Image 1 (tube, rainbow, N blue to C red):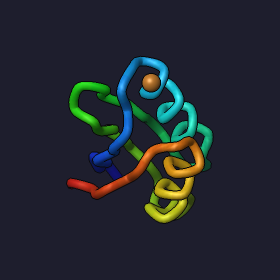
Image 2: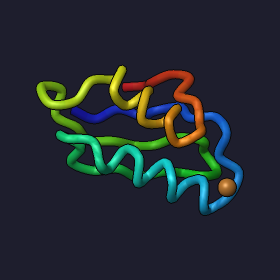
Image 3: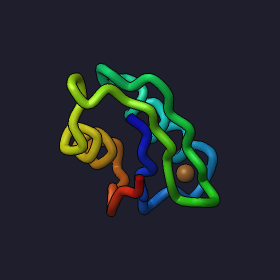
Length: 71
Ligand SMILES: [Cu+2]
């Protein structure tokens, strides 16, 4: 399943890398593309293995905020 996550708080390449790492290490994440300029992450994930709540927690634990999603 593909979605776009809206993420607040990324200000530089390091931030984007940190968010990429945080999302990529979750189980069931097939693909993650973080856009610093867009403040977003395009993801491809298996909804049987990972929930949006888990993604939200991973992003917040990394120091950023998941503010919404788009299909
Ligand atoms: Cu940064």
